[in-house]
Length: 463
Image 1: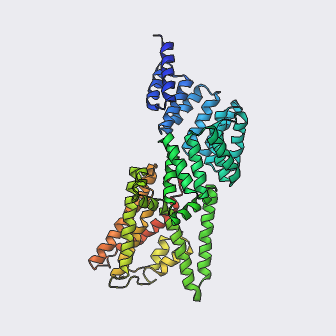
Image 2: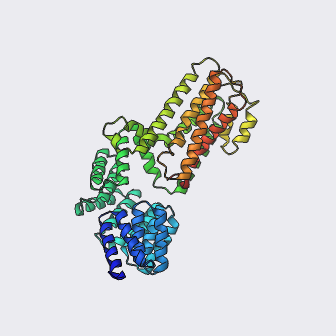
């Protein structure tokens, strides 16, 4: 067999396997084709597509970049590069790649859909709507563009147009997994959990590997709880805003809490304390709610099977931390000895040095309510309970985190909190609360736990 015949045969076999979703086998045949013609851009492009489908996004980017270097005027190569860059959370580079593809071929549906995907990843809903409509103007039956349009309409609260778009998609192709997933999220956002469950189940029947549908089914199960439903409403509200806007809103809320706490003094001091406690409860619940929901799903004989092994381990770890932390916190108020010994003589300077960036309210609260080294057994037990409950926040980003750096960082934070809690309990049980290093270590761990709530917003640490 000639080299050309071998190349054509390997490429044809790889294409057939790729269409069947057998990406690992297809990759093998594309590599065989490349062994004959290493410079062939088409084979490199197909290989990159297989790598992307197998979760090898980094390798896929290297491969498609190589293909573009060989054949820079192929629009589809730039479009695939845009899709890969979107998966790698590089939206600006992805947009530039999609634009290059469109410049080479303005009527390319692939490049237009890739551009829409980059806009969606950046939460630029109006631009996503515009580019998806451009794609549909070229091909009114393009299901991907139509689904992208439905998604962008939902994010802009254009519910009538969204429902019309979903109905049209389902009538044209009732066997499309992406459409059912899209319809499920729309129903869940509206508060119709039963309809959402039906669409997500159908999507998973059509495509068992559809992660969006699986996550949606989990959320619809958890949404049966009134409290979790309120959390979902909050998430749906926040997801419509860009990352910068979300941070601005969170910072604004923190500033408002600081102002209220500083104003509510004297006879209103109790009210000020309640405002601060409500804010802290909001912050804590917003970070652990999704895992707490999984804890309840473990008790459902059907829903537990939707959880992955990693999600089950995560729920068990967080549940144990919350249970032990809550039990210790409650027991601290019934144990002999003072729960908190208030002083500023020994603790204030250290706390001012350790927490210069926590904000005046939290810093002042820690400084004025610090537990000194001579605190009683109850105070140490209370501190241990707070540390164990607080370590639930970093634990929520350990087992299901695809970022190695993030997993390591949050594991270290949780480990430090657990170690500090154990030392506090040991000092309490041994009636030796005056151990010099226990209190500074515990307070430092507590401050790091507070700071970890901001680390969860760093995309490089949480994937």
